[in-house]
Image (cartoon, rainbow, N blue to C red):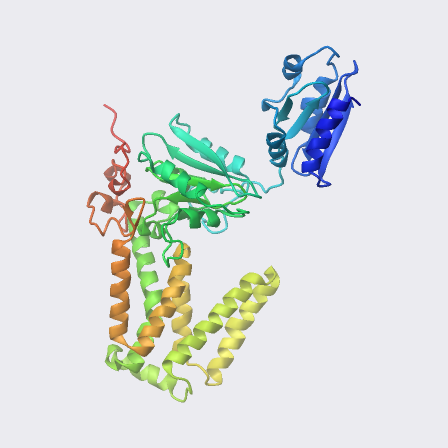
Amino acid sequence: MNGDLQSRIKAIKQKLSSQDILVFEFNSLHGKKFAVIYADGIVDKNMIGELIVKPLRAVKESDGEKEIKLLLASPEVKEEEKDAKVIKAISDGNAALIIDGESKVFIIGVKSPPGRAVAEPPTQITIKGPREGFTEDIKVNLGLVRKRVKSEKLQIKTITVGKQSQTAVALCYLDGVCPQGLAKKVEEKILNKEIDLIPDSSYIAGFISKRPRSLFRRNSTCEKPDIFCAKICEGRVGIIVDGSPIALTVPYILTEDFQSAEDYYAVSYRATILRFIRVASVLVGVGLPAFYVCAQLFKIQLIPAKLLFKIASSVAGIPLSPSVEIFLTLFVLEVLNEASVRMPKYVGLALSVVGALVLGDTAVKSGIISTPAVIIIAFSAICLYTVPDMVETTTTLRFLYLIVAGSIGTFGIVLLTAYILCYLCTEQDYGVPLLAPFAPMITRDMADSIYKANFSALPKRPKVLGSPNKTRFKEKR
């Protein structure tokens, strides 16, 4: 082989020395020499044969770069001269075509990374509405977004994050709808951090949050492209990370967690009832164990007389104090929950049955814990999972309320509630208050908060997001 071709191959292989970086050398029928370098496992070898090797069989010895480029059958062809860019392109899953005697290298798009098909997401299931969910492939995810938003105003800006992983991160927003400068702020926050690997969008969530260690999260997550598109059409910036099926949107408002995609496919009064049920469930799930402990230790009069007699007969003979009893039951619940998630599927199912029926029933019959404690903790756990996106926050709050209820009583519960409300009322990200539209009070945005109005009553985009294009829809004249 010509030394020029071999020296170029050698220079690239010195940088990409892994055994899965393959070199395929071939000649045209007229003696022109070529080499294709690619990463095995993330390219389509059939495409290499059909789009590169087969057309170049007819290349003559005298043909230059222009003639060769015309023969390449791929729509994704770029020219590069620097080895660093060629190496990055190969690592991304492209094929590098080296031509004997030519200085430029052709980068040809033949990516075919392994991945799963588009399916319904496991956490955001709806009875009515689209059932497509994001996958781990950023190109598939962007295609699902383009499928729904065909406007020329849709802007997709791709940046690379991670020194070693070189992960593609796409910022999606509508030009003229997204507040001016918001996408730039998000981009700067992401690029301002330097890290080796970005395996999931949760890493990016930590980058763009004002307070990443806060108990309350600062960005919304979604696995469904219809939810994602609806949010960017309101003026938010969407973030899709290659390798993650969970997309992010900012700014985030706390009331988003109490809303479901199905609310917009059902009648308004039904959606309103469901949202109020979710709010009530979270309040009960967080506060019920603390209320039970507080009532037994400090304010027995909080419990109605008939119910009090039932509880008194159930807790008679229990050796543990109400606080320890509830904490022990909660601890067992969390252990069972963690074990059922980590164990293999069928073993986890059996473990849940054994823990719930055998262990719980035995503990009650042996007099270690009381029946009301089991009922309260079980009902509390069910209530929290009516809003799955808030489970991490509400589970922690439940423990905090238990601690203050068992140590200070009613006064502690009131103080903790006041502190949380003050914290939520003062927090904001990207100029959007976390507790909007209640603090500050924005009357127009109340129509789609906990209360859900008819779509005809929502002609304007949310005021709190500050979109320059305020009109969502209007009647045609």
